[in-house]
Image 1: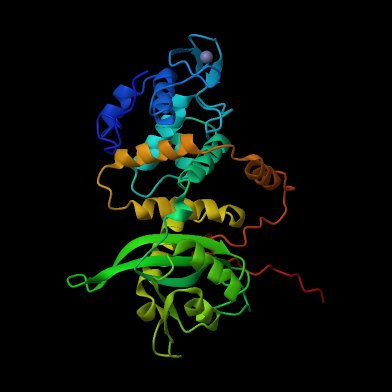
Image 2: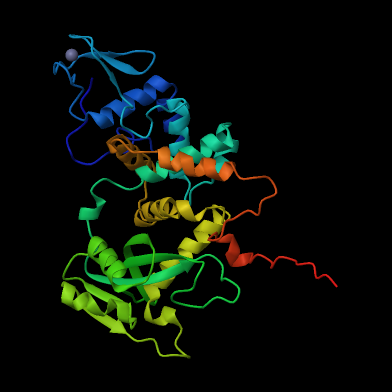
Length: 360
Ligand SMILES: [Zn+2]
């Protein structure tokens, strides 16, 4: 098997297709896809896990058989493709489709484009979202000047509180790098972003988010919310700006976070039509971050490469919880009220209060 080129970075054409026609030419069978995965998985060439021998052949069932000892090695074991019922070629087409479109695709679109069932399309996307988080990303923290704030997804609960602690909404902690003020655009240039679904807005929760996503010593801009007050004691340069009550809208103080939050909400509504559920919100956020942090990458084919690279690096992911959640949803009784309390559809589509019959 040919070894991958030295680490000069992947090259268009050679390491990944740079256009649809190149993609179609390169990937015509499951074996083509398996060979590509093998190259990503064993960049220095295949070596048998039993005897270390380097020669192997590929069987029809996509197993590499060691030419010396006959040991079979699956190219998909431990990756997101393990035990899949879909052909690898279908996976590759889906990955091309997902990475070459600017804002992604919904399960419904994938179902239509690939001619697979909705459930298969949904699960495929969900697994791809897992692969959008690079292993070791946590070590690669945001640096420099960073805005941190929380945003709320989902519709307001009738009679509920507004602003911080609004009940019935999903809380998303947002950290985004500021890369200097654009003199032409008259707004902050945005760097990388990190998002996390958080259970509350208490100090310990928010400190944990900042400590996991931002390099110590960075400048952290927040509003005057007192849960952030301990950041300076934790090794950050904390710059808090109190939002004056009344005339100053929050986005004047936290412009970068505000822009990321509105892009996120627009994306959830635009691409997914608000059709995401609270228990899967983290996966959607992973996809948003993957796209956002690579938004300036000119080569869409590079995203295809990066996603596959992550996909083969994923080891032993437990998808059972993911599938079980889905089955719970399916098992709902007919006629039961559909519960999707945190859906963004509520942003534009606040559920009507239930009619109650008043008896005389
Ligand atoms: Zn062997």
